[in-house]
Image (cartoon, rainbow over the protein chains, first blue to last red):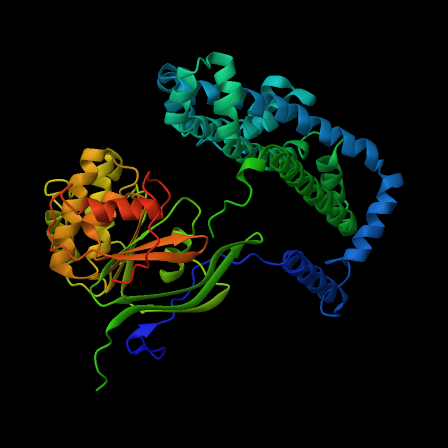
Length: 275
Length: 245
């Protein structure tokens, strides 16, 4: 056979293979947008078109936060906010998780409350704040309740569907080997549902901070929301920006916690993402 | 006008390593137009890697691949889109057909799935789902059909009827076909030429020139034994003579 073959009509296939990106490039790509936003914010703040009171610069905001640390007792206010958020999240996401498991695992659970909860979900939690104040006073209870209510639904929905979508064949196989009840939940169902459980937790955390902002702005004596309301009332724009940055940092922290949990518990899923 | 090309696959000097292990070692492979070639070999001999490179699913470290533009794949699992009905799966991604529905129904009829057009993939048996996968591959009238152990997950009886079906469809559509398999009888029943892959190289080549359709289990026992010997699973002495039919 000759080496020269007629290749007319043939082509080199375009390779669909996924190429792995170098780590350095990956980090740089992730940093691009935040850096651009920061640069844009700085340029806007520095330009003479916008007065510094309307838009403080990033550096100015940072200095303001340092000043607030002593003048506004930032540490204790931050603590008050974090306590409310964690308590609300603990109850809301906890109950959401438990009921999600019940609805995802059992037909009776699903029939009993899934439909009702799906309907109740349509009520915006912010609309309930005045009612909660009426019922529970102006103390800590209504604020924690609002956070709990807001963080309940993401956790419930994701737990229910995560548990429901666990591969029944694997569950069946585990059952034939005598894995039952709590062992089945612990060894098979929860680990396999975990990606969606973490999605639920992540959404719950984000929404709990959202609820916190709303809850703390009404009749509060402490917390970041209280500071925000005060700063707005006295038109101290630097402080408003400082509070907003604090809320953003709390959201970032929540996302970071979920990332860490994913790294710890989802080792088996790494490297299988379809791009 | 150029003369029609007599080859549909020309692969030269292909090499591929995974994590330092050389899976394919400077392989040359040519398939003539309309030829049915089976690629056999033990697990890890690189047969799937070679097939994936022909289909553009994987890039060779070295070497060159030339294949026709119209090429389709059947995998070991059906890989149907579970959220689409059977007939929509058949015409998945198909462009330029005016009446895709009729095309899909006709193709499903040909693979023996009339009445299942509106079914969901999850309701099909393994053999039925693989028939859909074959229909999906053939409805595009491929010049090159790449089969990666397509019947490996099926039960023995279903596999036999699938062999007959594929044999009949190939005699109708005449695609150039490369079948990766570990089933010696499957290769002997379907292929015109059998290549034995060992240690990343084509170790042997056997030509099967019986006419199609062949009868099950009535192929030459001599050929079968030789093939098994090349694969290292026979009591006979390994054949020493060079196979250059």
